[in-house]
Image: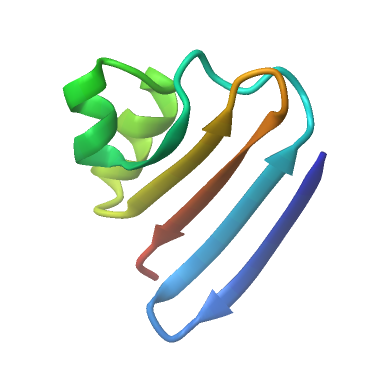
Length: 73
């Protein structure tokens, strides 16, 4: 697992990547896309919305996932 965090122009940006099992879906989705699929980690999605942030998940089942999170400061 790799985790990085940077403070950018648009807020705090966190990237998490692993080579584990990934999520049950395949592809790249933002918060709205994940909601349409009824997919993704509910608690993380809820917290990002409360912080008025953004989320993108890239998942390849059996190969791993990447999460990119941006929250305003």
